[in-house]
Amino acid sequence: MGPLIYAQVAYAPRTVPISLATASFNPPSTWIVGAQKSSLSSEHFRATYPEKTDRRLIENMIRELESARADLLRRLETASLRLAEPGRFEVVVHATTAEFIAATGLGGWAAGATRGRRIELQPLDLLRRRRVLNTTLRHEMTHAVIEALGGGRAPRWMAEGLAIHVAGEAATLPQIENKSRLSRDDLERKLMRPASATESRKLYAMAYHEICAMIETEGEAGVWRRVAQSAARISRRSVLMNQREKDADEEGANRSLYDASRFHSDKELIDEELRCVQCDTPVKDVVCGHRNPCPFCGFPYPVGDCSDLVEN
Image 1 (cartoon, rainbow, N blue to C red):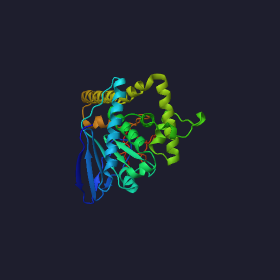
Image 2: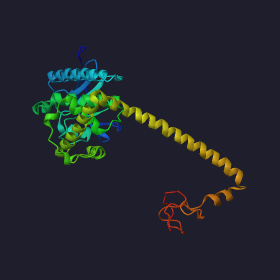
Image 3: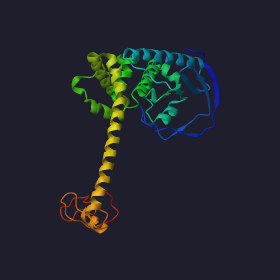
Image 4: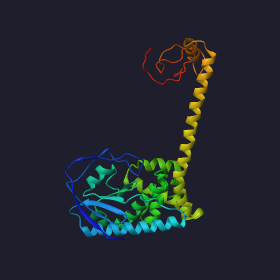
């Protein structure tokens, strides 16, 4: 690890906007910043923390994060994968649990949260007293790597289960009976909004069980490749969707030319097109919606317009 670079940052109390892009948590639209912050940077991390925090805690935190990053890069190398690193990871240490909740929108039971290359942490003293500081750092660093590798598109159950595996947190999870297990789709849905800390721990245990099953069949390297494929699948899907939109545009243009050759006037064209999409009966030239269904078959959107601007 390179030399640590210290800086002091003075903040006037203010409201700072937070990006709402895809991530591992869903923060509110604002973040209340404390009065005084300091920062400490290494080669790959920049930490911002309350001025009164013991600096040795911050130094140890950055060393642990550098170690976790190096370990994760070795795991990716085993899977023949490389991590794009456009800049330092941002680490924000909050002064209080209330500040952490306001910044992340998570419950006070959460130890940390990651969005892209930004890691948010509860007060380090609190994590140390809970004896979860180092595992939390490894867990959140794993999330940051998964976010980067998978383009923020890896399933949440996969991200949580893999982070637990890398951080070595399995011993802290509750035992889950086979009859209590959920499908991966249901697990993904419930992980979006766990109702409590107890439910969250059970869901994490299920996610870890799924990752263990994957590692048993295809190895950890195979799981990392699946994470990377999450981004590739989205890219291919975007290409297909763009092509479909292009094809639809071309089809619409061709249909317009065809219609222009069929009809002698705009009035004929309108009369022909205003037919119920369900029963093909001509309908009135009005804005249709569920208040103006087809008078013949009752179909709620006879001309394909879902607005409700005109009432019966």
